[in-house]
Amino acid sequence: MFDQLEKINSRPQPFEFYTASDLWTDEYTSKQMLAYHLNGEVDISSRKFAFVERSAAWITSEFDLCEGKSVIDFGCGPGLYAQRLAKTKAAITGIDFSKSSLEYARSRASAEKLNIDYVQQNYLEFTSQVRYDLILMIMCDYCALSPDQRKALLGKFKTLLKPGGRILLDVYSLQAFEQKTEGASYGLNLLNNFWSPQEYHGFLNSFKYEDEKVSLDKYTIIEANRTRQVFNWLQHYDQQSLAHEFAESGLQIEKFLANVAGDAFDPAGTEFAVIAKLDIS
Image 1: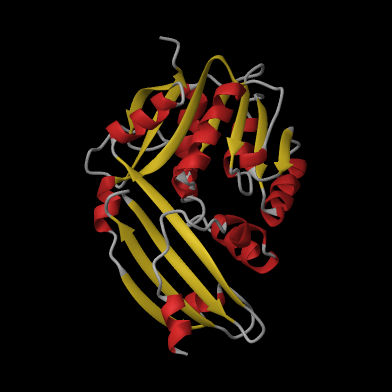
Image 2: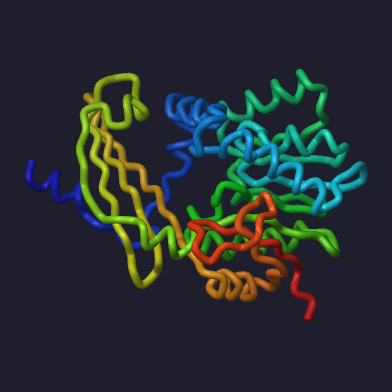
């Protein structure tokens, strides 16, 4: 028992394990995540619907979305942005590896007669000959990726952009990192049966990595017939560190914003957004 508890409470190296697919493709937990997506009153999985509406309206205006324009949404979930942006007549592509989310997204697109190309795939593996006017990555998904994954993704973005195309994404700030705390907790059916419909013992270990500005929520779920761990990593940034990361991949940040609704940058905010383009200097 002591050895098991030692393993549960052990601190991994930053981004040592990648378990996003376990969270989003497991039949039960993916449906739990979808339920959070579709709860427009909470900022979990997706932001509140009022914000999504304001954000989509700003994106439409800022990037002049209309017939003839093309948009690709990395990590589109159940299509909350894709549905709204498709009404501009722009060509919309959404990528996600959650079957549950895309089944919902496709059903809504069909009901509203919206022409959206949904692709069920890990976006790290996505390739296409199509070039896009706008690449979206919303809800700070970028922060959940390791340095190598982020570098590969930015390289992919470069190949997918049309000349003059733009990238819009958001990230967690260093202010958010400072608010994080380390700790350990235990609960029977932790998070109200989020992880399984069967009874389980759940452990949550939260770690901070000061040098890397990375945080981790590590979940250990012990059921009668299996034990699994899920690692939720988050990279945190300031303006300089994110600009440097983009520049190393040949991309230039042209604007910092408070969020993907176009609000003015707030140095005290726990998140911020950027508009980026190819660096042709």
